[in-house]
Length: 479
Image (cartoon, rainbow, N blue to C red; front, top):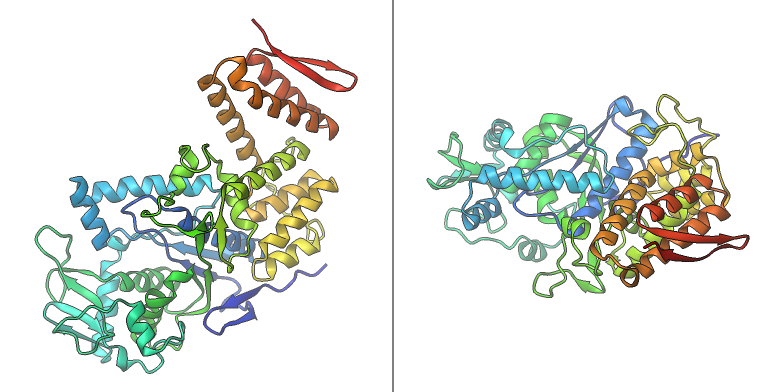
């Protein structure tokens, strides 16, 4: 069975194209990462999950050793400066603290660690080198301690976003400054005050503009041109447009990346997410507080909820959608036999590479068709109902990044914490009934190990089950 060709919707051409890497022995992808001044909100989780699935798929198609995935960390930015001052801590303290939480959250979402996670502050030399190239080629100029990109010097500027000049000016929130030659010119380097982070440069002590950071980090780790550049649709303009301008003009290339991928917007319960509406929620809050829907949610639940909508379509983040995802994972958990060989980090069974005929062709076709994860999840669900082998189910789960072991462990820990917090028969009735239902489902699918585990867990909590030939008929709290 031949492997279907990977097709990607390219924002640059507005068409779905067959993916042809520059070098099949070294597939290269760059995705814009977090600015570590605050916890990442749930909208930020979408590109993390989307491009993790693509990373897994590329590793499956080309081999893990032939794929480089770079996701940067922006640790120098005016927002960081302002937040550190507001909290009365150093910039380094803030960025280290925020990045630590970010990494924990991303792990909980089931994402593989990228090949490289470069920090902006570690690539100042590359930023200066690019800026010097741009000045030398007439695409940038120094003025009043600043260096700016001369937008009119690039005739093809705007080809990614396909916006008119007026639209671009509005979208860029153009700053008026006397040292700028043109309204659209954007900052590559700016002077730093004594209390701001800064580095010595040919233009004085200063710090980089936001856009130049990604051009420098992608160049350092992927080269002048590479295969895929990804991020949220909100980054198309001005950030990605400006990245293209900087990189292409600095290196004399026609393209920065051959394929540009962008995930759609996220709204919450039918409304745009904003702090003013009170519906702003972070990944960390969803995982560790009861702010959304009155309960903590597990990482695999957040991930499956994302994957049930195509990445390019807008997604409505609702409590109902999370509940549906959790119910689906619970069903899969009761079907899955966990006595399988351990999975490798890329979703393959360790030391046992999958044969091409082991994964349903429809599943691979769905993922290879511009990451059609909604269809892939339907096919995965069907595979569970058809009682496919544990090995095949594990491979399919691994390609989508859904970890049922993590889901089970998280459920057990959460339920135990809930029981301890809400002791007493009345407070735990709904909780125990749910576990009893799961045990019945496990027995119906002949998953005796899961059935016994739930029985033993309830017994440890002081719950006695009353079974007969028709199943569990009642339960009671042992005194």
